[in-house]
Image 1 (cartoon, chains in turn cyan, orange):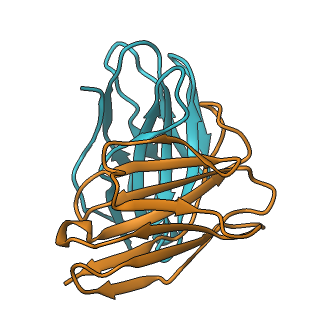
Image 2 (cartoon, helix red, strand yellow):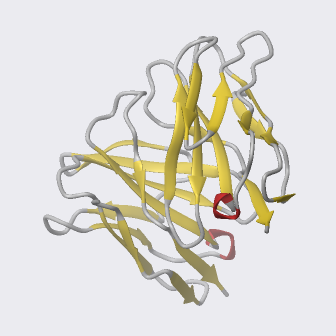
Image 3 (tube, rainbow over the protein chains, first blue to last red):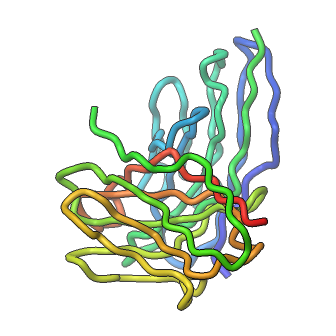
Length: 112
Length: 115
């Protein structure tokens, strides 16, 4: 069935390192794709989104490109900070729905 | 900045007991949702609610679950007779609309532990 698959965590990096969190999806049609972030003690917040192939979503230095050919939406950041430590969730919404299907979440830990 | 709030942050209960999880959505939002995440697993949709009615629910949302908007601000999830497998983080969310591109705003979650 349709699903969202993320790399398992935790991902542990030093400050200023390059970040990639992989996300792939399966879906019929052309879904919209999202990354949510959950900081400790807070709710999930929308980080970025892309609604069609080759779109690039970006926010707070994070980027993700909608790759239809590889059904991927990998999250990247060139230089992470300690304050980026959080759990990151990839999600997709298929056409005609408004309910996101989430991945399991990937915990990111950034050390000074 | 407006936010969704949830209480309690952690609820511990005995198997078979009833629990009510509470949420206060953002005040001008009209659509409300509950999700859950069992430890180590995916965030799963439970139910959506609009105009005092359930608009969509998943297979997980069986007769043991119910939702209510008892007043103008609260949105509750009741589990009538909890089971061990109900232990999870429960997230409430709200949105202005229900288009696929419309952002849902999530609360911080309630961790339910069933013993």
